[in-house]
View 1 (cartoon, rainbow, N blue to C red):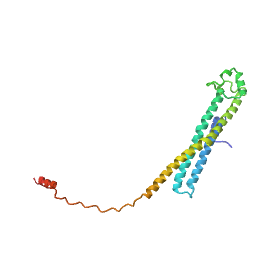
View 2: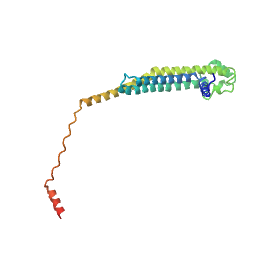
View 3: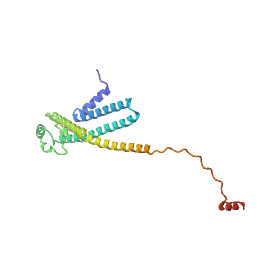
View 4: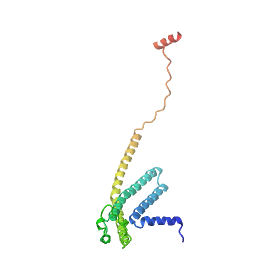
Amino acid sequence: MKLTPQVTKTTDFIFRHFSEDIGSVLIWTTIGGWIASSAAQICGIWRNPNYTKEQKSFMIPQEIGDASMNILSFFAITMPLKKLANKLVKTGKIIPLKLVSKIARHGDSHKIGTYDFDIPKLPYFQSGNIAKTYNSFHNFMSTTAAVVGGVVSSNIVTPHLRNRIASKRQNQTKLKLDFIENSMQNNVPIQQQTEPVPLRPIDNSPFDKFKTRVMSI
């Protein structure tokens, strides 16, 4: 079956960006899975007839907030760890001895571990299986950083943030319910409006007498 040009472009893009970086694949597929599962759960709550409108108005924003917190904490921790791992491998600070010996044969052993050193940009990167060894180790370090970041964010950071936010939300809800309860307990029936008090005729005050005299002049 012949692929359409759009499908071919998509597969080329995926291969070009992720074939040598399995850690990125792991991160983005995890985020995509979280988005899909949260969307399914939100849709389930919205379509469930057993929940009242008031319950849905509370549960749906809560689910959106939890999903956002999970994704943001995961992304904020795993991406810096992965970038750090990539930098350590690219500069040669953490590479296997097999790769060190291959680079040393070309007289660049003194550059290994320096900040500006970039192994994939070496002119002989594609020779002597250097690229194969590098890409294999790079994928290992990138995947390890993504897994470690996911474990830390999912088991340490996210539960801590969720507990704090839930505690704050619970306190706000309690204050709101207490306010409503107190308002209902102190509610006074509205009194019926009385007929307006008719205006009294202007009495014969000294000011009125003075005004009458002025107007008669």
